[in-house]
Image 1 (cartoon, rainbow, N blue to C red):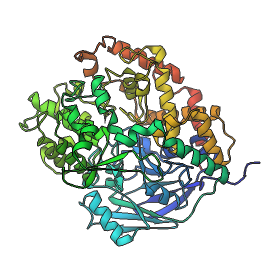
Image 2: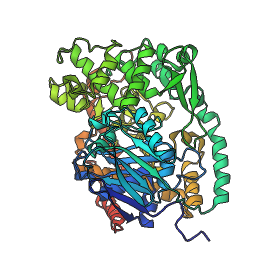
Image 3: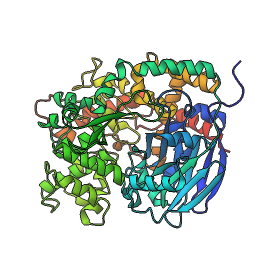
Image 4: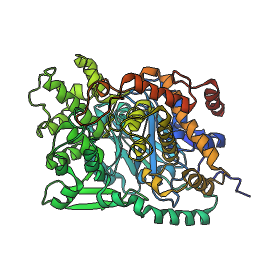
Length: 604
């Protein structure tokens, strides 16, 4: 018989009011844990209960949750992750962002499954959570410091036992796409760094010694050993060898590399930014996230004769390179470093600057130096985001708000969905991914929908998606919901031959629940639905599930996509709703809403 005690969980979250320093331990019933797992799923449920959907995310009462999962602390590879969940100041919709780090391990050892922060400190502060001891420490001397400098000073004062989640000047200035960072990893998208900044918290520090038990520790250790071996296999080889930038030249060849604010889909100088070129001209090293056996991180020297120090990913190279028409590797590396230090999401930062460049070239912004291809413009624009100059006040709003301030119908080419800037996948050339962007709960997102996998397979025609093909986008989103709630790295998906069965087995070995693939598939749908419920409560409208007008009006040279029209795309969105079992207007049915409400009835 499986153990009767709760395994893998502590069964509660800690709610801290940073206005007073008071904390309350809130029980999490097993029914809720089984229904939403952890990470993104559990976080969505918690912030819905805490009223985040109807609050201004930068207000005192807005909750921000740091959420762990049942697998954190287990021997399973890539499981040392945490989710930051709340309402985005950039989109005013549901937002979650993930990071891998020792912060997840230390946070869960505080004896809770999540930390929920509300209120606002009187002055810049550090929130220290040492199991049952919670206190605020002054941080005026750290306010204004970059993230690496702040982390170094925090460790000097508090030692190595604490783990810190830190914001930079961007979070302090409430740039709407500011990150929360730890040891070079970032909970990046959607602006949760600005939420922490609005609470006047420079950092959250955690330390604890409370460990969870595992239902079947010996079997779990054997499963973890086998999973680690598979994670070192051919499915992840390209990420070890070249990192996520391995896709850069492939996307360029397929005319799927967004260039000059999505005016083009190929970048003539792409090879200059490729990992093959950078590896041949600069010192490079490789690193791994905490508790990871894959090792996909590639860290390059800022200058050709320096030691490695700048971590590069496909998304920051795309956003700070081709999207802005910049081909100089030195500039892209330097700007990646600036974003890491200031605490800026590279996708939104690059997307907003690219949008501003196009507006300036059209004469709608009187900024002569802000032009595509001007390498000197990029760091200057990034630095302006944390100043009070006129351009910085525009850029820190993100492209959607900025378009509203500029006018001239510039919203038609603002590179965003629901306010979140579009990642490095050309929607007209990857139509499954385009659908994933449009319907995503947090906006244009390649991590909560991996629909590009279908586009790069023989399952669909990526240039002419049919309504009967939308099931691939739905299934990709469902798998992501499970991975983000367990929480495991997306790169593991290629190593799992039977995704739901193997994921269910991990849960069984950790928790003791006799959970099968069918139940886990239903859980995935429930997690997607609770995010939809959040957005409905936040004011979501059907028209938000679309793309900017540019993608329907402007043809890409050499790419046949005549089927990509507003009416045709709306047909795809309607097919997606039907596949999800939602109403025709994209809202939950009464039965789906009731299923979430039944879980809500567990709220103490």
